[in-house]
Picture 1 (tube, rainbow, N blue to C red):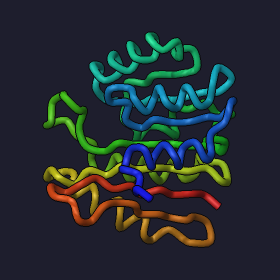
Picture 2: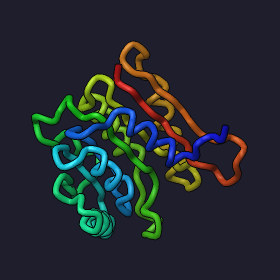
Picture 3: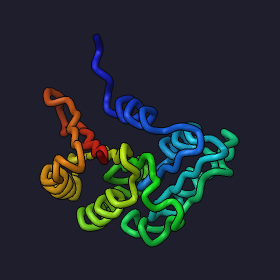
Picture 4: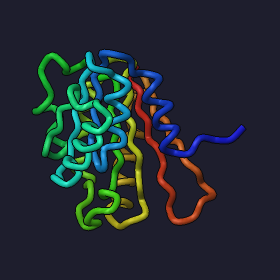
Length: 190
């Protein structure tokens, strides 16, 4: 058996909770790969909210969605993921099936613009309320840059303290790879 790499494993987790008509959130659109995957999984009857603080990320995501014919079910939002609870529709609160964040910086973009511990923790706290029972929140954590190390410590400490009666928290990552490999923190709401 070969162990799944980080990004394919995140998709395994997503597909376990998503179906046509589901509601999903991409907290960090980046170049649009996860946003597109979520849109394909939820279909035209579902809804995806995609957040990013960089216009170029939203433009890249929109182009990717348009090319794949998956734009209609996606709401792209030029804002921090920390604002998620104030932005998603009222009827979607408590009904989110899945959310994913690729923390760090935009691949190929300005490496000085990064996700931050405070905003990410605010988003995680909000999403734990917005998830439906059985829903999942996935954080792909990159700790190989100075802000990423701080963010990694903050989200790991916070998720480790979640009450096991309400949440299951999984950490998945490879420990024998060089250069601070990414890892997953997956939170399932019970």
